[in-house]
Image (cartoon, rainbow over the protein chains, first blue to last red):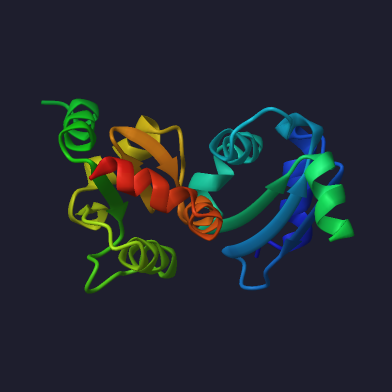
Length: 82
Length: 103
């Protein structure tokens, strides 16, 4: 069964993240918070597409649903300070 | 007509289109359910396409938007996002603005 830790590893293999946290223990539904420099200047759609691209075919086969909150490092700092 | 052309026609001839699993009355997935609730909360008029009724559309829509999950929302022919993005844009008020412009 796919674990949240494995999913974190899959994402960080292909996308450099400043911070990542994936939660979920049923093997198919996951929630995540992802902070990456790669998100700077991108729309929310483009940010999620980068994460989906990092997961590649796994998104079609192993993972039913991955809920995401994506932040640039700057947004994340503001979020943490708030 | 091939599937990509069919999807293109659907999203450009209707101002607001939601591709979802099931129907607004009987959604077959929690995320699709959330998407319909958000649109209802915005008082949006929309066309819902049940991807479970057509395997070609179910796979084709993922290619169309380069987006591997369903639901998917389109406004004025543009891909807006999935349920996470819909929720974020609903909370910020952006979604209501987009929907108002689509009417």
